[in-house]
Image 1 (spheres, one colour):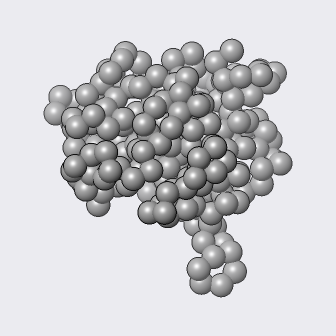
Image 2 (tube, one colour; image 1 turned 90 degrees about the horizontal axis):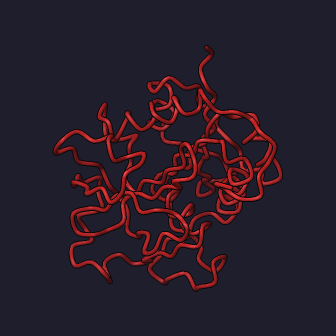
Image 3 (cartoon, one colour; image 1 turned 45 degrees about the horizontal axis):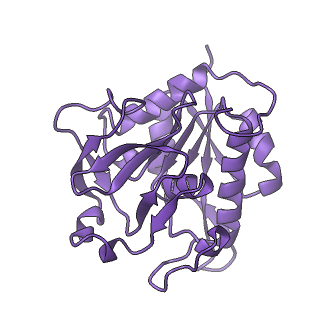
Length: 240
């Protein structure tokens, strides 16, 4: 069986002259080490359906903060807004995955936040305003998890395993997704769509965590789900 193609959303950078795409190599390496073939996805919202049809799974990556006006609320002054073109594309990609619900999705950090927002969730735009020790979630520090429901993650972790986090915002409510894990201080750390084979958002960075079940193991599980993906006609809604 050939290795599945895993589409990876990329960041955009225009601080040093012309706009260019960039991606931390850890994402592509995790896909490769998980058994997949990484394919980087340029920002072309009109091609989102084509990307999703041609890829066997999709990874939404980390980045800066969502621009909240698209979700009916002002962006906090403390936020570091993400590139607008990237946000439009990432949301188009998520919407395309809704139309093709057999497509496995792994949404990481910013990706999880956009996934939750796209499904009716909300954000804590300044985590420090609602958690006294928000700094423990920044700087690639490690912390344990508590699983909230059976599903993709419930049987994935080794006893005592921790995850690597680096975020200043967090999901406040998960919309029509199920909360799958929280940190030991109550921050939502994972959400999933229980109606799909694999539609998972994680607030931590599994590409940075080494060869553990909640790090490289998630990419292996994504690739395995991608091996069994069918390519049906579009659905009107994820999970229908």
